Structure formats: C-alpha cells, structure tokens
Length: 173
Image (cartoon, rainbow, N blue to C red; front, side, top):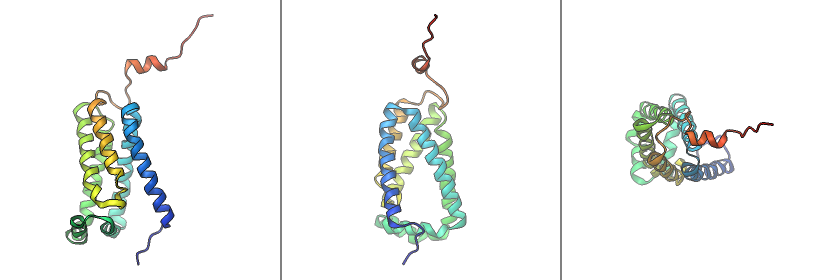
C-alpha cells in the first residue's frame, strides 16, 4: 500500500480544480491573453519549483506516475526512468523554468515558449489522472491560441487601445 500525505478527497479536488483552471485558460487566451500568459508563467514557474525540489528530495514519488499512465509510459517509468530519474526530472524542471520565462517575452521567443508548452502538455497527457488529464490538452489548446495572435507584446507592455480604454475621463469644471 502506498502512502499519500493527502486524503483522496483532496486529490480529487485538486484534479477538478486543475481541469477547471485549464479550461478557463482557453477562454482567457481568447479574451484576456495577458491573464492567460500570467497563468502559464506561474504554472510553469511553480512546476519548475515543485519538480526540482522533488527530484532532489523525494525522486521515488515519480514512480507512482506509472499507476495512471498508458502502458508504454508505465513501462518506461518502471524501467529505464528509475536509473535516470533525478537528472531527467531536473532537465524537465529547467525546461519548465525556461517556458515560464518565455511567457513574458514577445515575438518568436514567445511563440517558441508556447510551442514548447504545447509539446510538454501533450507529452505528459499519457500519464493520465496524475497529470490531471484532460487539463493538459486544454492547456495545449490555450497555448496554441496564444501563439496564434498574442505574441507582439511583452507581458508588461500595453496596446495603445488598451490604455485608451482604461484612461479615466477627466472633465473640466
């Protein structure tokens, strides 16, 4: 029997919340692209922190991912992955940190980050419920939408139209 520090209710709640947030990332990518970019900045940054910490402190927890994975992933996780677990997860974590940084940029670098995120999300989808599937597919869709039309500004820049919308009207009395 495996030991989980969280109750099954907590794990189900996290799974549901992850899928809701991922679904809303699709909506945000069309209507509020900066919010979607911030979501992915924080998501990939958080994933970097979690994976780099766990790879060093408790790398054996990644073996549990085999439980919900498709057979070819299960075979890899319980086989070859075991001997290279820590370095491989640290490489993945470094990639997640890079993706977080690329979410703040513009142009080809931002598009590269979106495509890297799409590939990453689709690559972990076969892990199943431990990767909150289908949330990873929702996130890949949101990243695809973002790279299609929201790559011309840094995350901190504003369109002149956006500034006009928020600028308060000052009346002279």
